Length: 349
Ligand code: TLP
View (cartoon, helix red, strand yellow):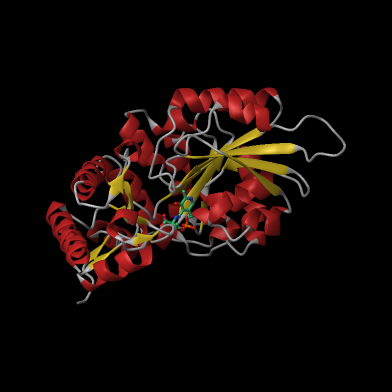
């Protein structure tokens, strides 16, 4: 069967009709010369939404994070991240390869760091030890199942960092999911950080791109790092235009994805052998432990795919399902039915 229900990630979302129209009619120029008015509009709009002075369109979330790290951190320094953060786990050791820095992974509670553990992880001044230069906070936290860090916790962590002259970056690939789930304006979540990266191409459905925001001075330096990494794009207005539509029309509807994730988590969690920590289902990600079914994650994903449902293996027995604009409640009911049949078949065999 051709897989029809794609729950591997919200990155699979396609641009909406309005986005495609915006792309076709976008006013463009050479953005490396700073002459693309649509890119400028997107950068200003994102900076304004996040309460920062300036923004920079980058090709991807990974590029946004790495440009931020390279701008903030010198070779030989250290970056604190949560132990399963995307920057540590999924960016091909770019912090080491590009900035020449090392990561200090700190275990959070369900992906959420706290001020005390960050304070403890900041290195003392000591000739033997690297200088801690940056703390990166992932909000929402992908591998923990889309968990959110509240404005209060963000503020406390940032205070602890800033007191020791350590900067703060937010990997906000899904910051708008956090804002919607917490019912807190995104600018309040972004407020305490020195830089924030937000993705346009996840739940917001734009085809490409992320925006990095921060102070004017930071963005000026980040622009050179983007160029160095090959991210200086020319008539990028065709990418920025759907990004503007994404920020304007797609943020509030994320609540629907969150309700769908909760529904999916509850239904899947009722199936024999599937374990789900409902406490972590706060946004659009569901992580199911399929160990009790007798299948491992790869086997479960393969069987689901044969039934028309795509999910991601996220560990030996962990399977990730992500809800988004391009799947509806009926699709999720179908996915649960498919999982139910697989689980029953394994039990009787
Ligand atoms: N995450 C992807 C995969 O890489 C796992 C996904 O499908 O969820 N920060 C966070 C928190 C992310 O989840 C991702 C993408 C990124 C950064 C990187 O974004 P891109 O894929 O645009 O480089």
